[in-house]
Image (cartoon, rainbow, N blue to C red; front, side, top):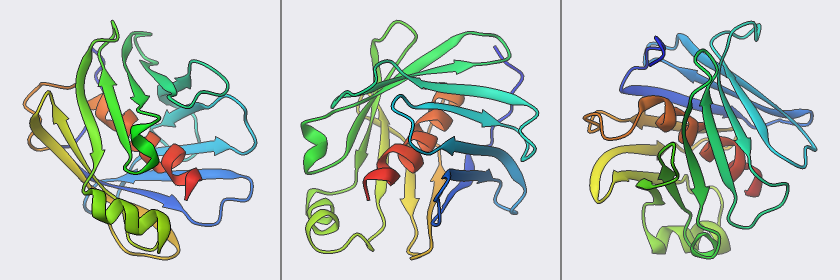
Amino acid sequence: MSDLQLPTSYVARRNFFNFMGITCRVMDKAGGLLFFIKMKAFKLKEDITIFSDEARSNAVINIKARQILDFSACYDVTDLATGAKLGACRRKGLKSILKDEWELLDADDAVLGHAKEDSMFLALVRRFLSNLIPQTFIIDAMGSPVGKLQGTWNPFLVKYDVDFSGNQGQIDPRLLLGMTVLLMTIEGKQN
């Protein structure tokens, strides 16, 4: 296992103005930088690296799409220090048309849990009336709640208050970080 230390609660933020790509920061509750993500624009196959510093000198986790275009895309999450595949995050394509839903998979692609948008009603309002209502995702490990990504209202950036304090070892925290980054980058590109 990697020596990468992750708190159970943190803030994940994506900048609004992303002309040359998506920039995200994961910070502790005091505002200190934990991770930095810069995703290039106009890539056909997503390949996202999570760094421990803004200078991008220490790559810690990689998230890579398996295919170029896929309605139910699957993204492998790898610990770069050990080279070990931590698992994968698979978007539930048809289900996500009305309400975003993802599966969290282990290293052998067995389902560990889910990340689902909070409610069908709010999901429909977000899609058809106003994308200003922030998304909230509930994360579970086979039905048992392990965390929540609570979107905050801000027209200039996407921000999630992340709480995985319910995760008692059911899902690797690094895989949960990967899921958080995907929700900020992939779901974020659709809004």
